[in-house]
Length: 497
Image (tube, rainbow, N blue to C red; front, side):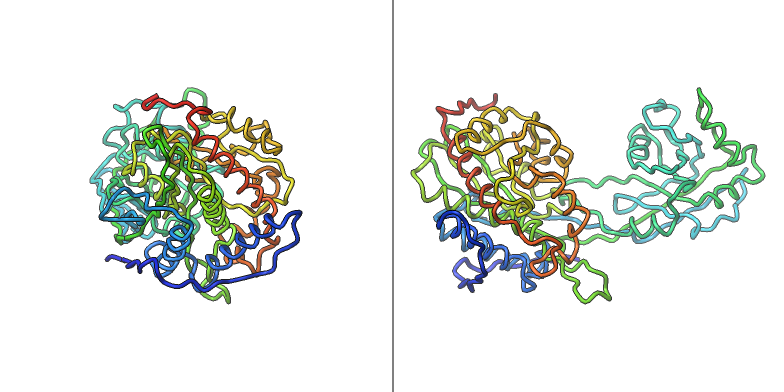
């Protein structure tokens, strides 16, 4: 099954949405705040239905942003005449369809039914036949050799602190599958509810075919009856120093399948051409997508509007583009990227990096913008990704020149993996977030624990009103960073360095 949204031309008229703006020290700041609010009001409106990739909400979002960017004076940045402005991204969504488990104990069928076991795969269909069970306790894959795990189903104790890294490590070391015994806080209903959601990947990426299975403690104890081992004894052995894996008198056949949906979506890419594009480029980005209708089916408000996450970021991205386009022409090209499918796993950013409009080693700096409007004016700036690139020293110079306070701690790095900059870092692109939103990190934590990824992240139900004062300062700082890094005299660059 496929979902595809056709993008209308950029010439569709925009209905202006206005809103009250709190007073600010200067007229310019008040005007900027009003424009930011207007963007957020449009993008986070119910009419855009939560901006889910592959829906009419996407088409409305990209038409709006495309018109804004075109009117600002940007040109297409895809560098692809066949796909101007809108770079196609094809996703594959897979959700669990069928699960089957059969166990043999000393060659005979056991009373454990398929309903007692949940089997899942990351691929379209995965199957393991008559593989012996190997009890590994609470250990991780690197604690064993490939010879110990190859061809076997690793039986893992879940414990009170479940960690998927252990399952992944066992599979990476060669286990045919992992059967997790739910002996801690989790139960089968909780696992099923969590894992029934769709998993997403770029269509060109292999989703693999790893098999994971889950069984309750009572069912596992019943499975071992009549064998040389009891679950109580195995648990005790796993807690002893020098524990070694134990082969059980049980084999299993596990199978899982998924339903597949193809989603056609897009990144939006614009550009301000520089005088010397051969000197490298600067990249600004913010994801446009959110979750669509994600509230409970019985809830009065089901739309996840994503006002802060990330209508605010796209609004800031657009206003940075406006300010840079109005100034004198820069030496380097400056690209503006609004990514799709960030909420599904940073997939739009990965798609950009895997099929870029310019050589990746030409990007001297990338600045991601995500979930602004958190902090008030006067909040210090933080760097998400501090210490992970060579950008910090120049960022500090710009902050000093602009009279902004810059925090010198790494506290914001707690969230570095939760934003598109992390995807770019995996492709060796120097990417950071420079923002007031993490300048008082308690405010961001409150957002994550409250309105984040919920229908209340809109302009009506937010626990805390939009803090556009901090976002105004973010735009000013990012504009200054754009001009600084677009100057080869300030930031020398050599391709491939």
